[in-house]
Image (cartoon, rainbow, N blue to C red):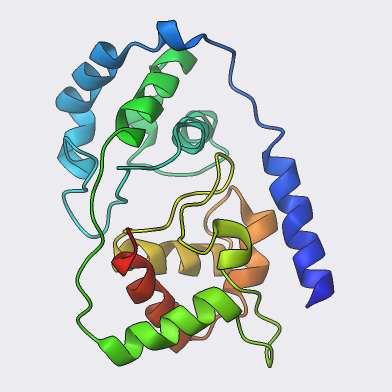
Amino acid sequence: MGEIMNKLYAGAALMTAFVLPAYSADKVDLARAEEIVSGRCFLCHGLEGEAASAVFPRLAGQHWEYTAKQLAEFKSGKRKSETMLPQVEELTPAEMKALGHYFENKQVPGREIKDAELVAVGKFVFHRGNQFTGLPSCASCHGVKGHGTPQLPRLAGQHPRYTEDQIKQFNKRERTNDNAVMHTVASKLSELETHAVAAYIATLD
């Protein structure tokens, strides 16, 4: 467990090295961000970042730095996506930052609990991991409320389907960025644990 956590922390530290070009707060053009969202982003992510479908991530409340980083990595090809590449290829760093701030200011509440027993399993794994398989807790990186950090994503309120899809992509190394941190975790999650954790995360505000 200690070795795994050391690798996770090292990976997280590497991600903090990502820095977008510096722009002062007064240069964040939220009007431009709203224009971009209403012109293209809303089709998948919704005008409020609530997501139009369970296969797309909720962006509401996500740290602006993390959102901007993902947009930059879609554009550079570090994170592969045939869907996202055409959407980001003309975005400037300033626009990516503005979009991050736009969605960070939105709020989407967690979902109601539909399967209390499944959510209970997910809560246990999220907060305590699994000592028998060496699985670290999700909370050790993403926080006890799933709010993450500017370098590690907010998970609270995310669609269960999207969370599960990302875990599976990390496990298969199909997601081509942030693998240093998440592949180790994803490879230790059982199918039940994956489903349960995703269900629990969706209930968090």
